[in-house]
Image (cartoon, rainbow, N blue to C red; front, side, top):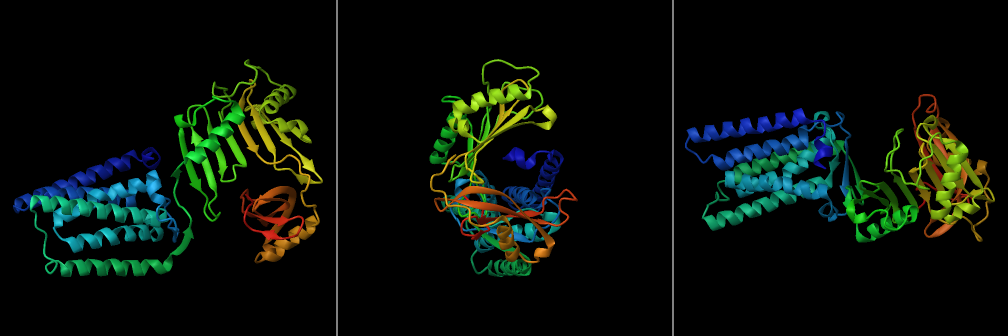
Length: 448
């Protein structure tokens, strides 16, 4: 995580460290000259500079989003590395703040209002542009409170006296007033969105079992141990608890959809120079691999690991990157003009090993799938009537696919609403809608 945050920002990190050291040393010298306690205040200044620098001045996108996410799952950040680090970061700040100031109310106001102001500033100030997330503020506040609690215990055991509440009443009220005014000025310009989760989470044992089963199916028992890599779960905003489980080690990068487990992808290598990460099919290399040879090798692999491909109605083999990355062999089954859920894409590198894999689980045949009763034109008209300013869009419905909703399989049109002219400028400004091909019902949310 630290590498992802600070990669390519070495000069900025060095400048932040130098700034913290200079200001801390200056504070220490100034207080020593006046014969006042200097160690705790100077340490607090260094810690404050680092926290403010990381949260506000770490280079961001440069453009404030004026958006903030509110995580409904209050306990979720406790299960994530990011959340725990956010909490740990402010523990020393709360501890040193109370020990340096000896003011409980003032420190409490700073611990609570400071993280809120930081998150709101990230959403509204271009210079501080970062992601505004309630989970970050939550863990920063809790970390500061834990630090204050530790300082209180140390002070009690060491006989250290704090300022009386009467003496610190004015600075505490002034600080709280400034914080509340700052919050009141920024909140009206921010759009708040409630979500179910906002962070990458550590994978559960159930998710590890699902990933292990998918890897065993794709590459055989014992190919790799899930415990040897890193398993993470990334929730998808606005999908009602759905997300992606990701696993990575020195052999493979893999993902499965969760909780459906219907989609599985694996990347072993992505290079025009084959490596030993690719999965061997017959134990030998095949230089100058032709389309027919690639298709034959891929079929040999697919039949062994995904036997349903023997009944696929459409099998294609196309070059990848002009053949520099090998061949992509795909299996699809279409029944009564409906694309079946079971699909497989196998990329064979230039010497005959599996380099990429994309498998969609589900039936390759249905005995009781509802019939297609809705025409393609009617499906597009349904979507056209549901959008604002339909004249600004072009509508396409090229696929009828069997999809699962609420545990049931139904044929659905995938209707794409694309902004007119988007294809001309190379952008991908479009939205997918889903229309039940049996009933005509419109779904804006993707299927499971």
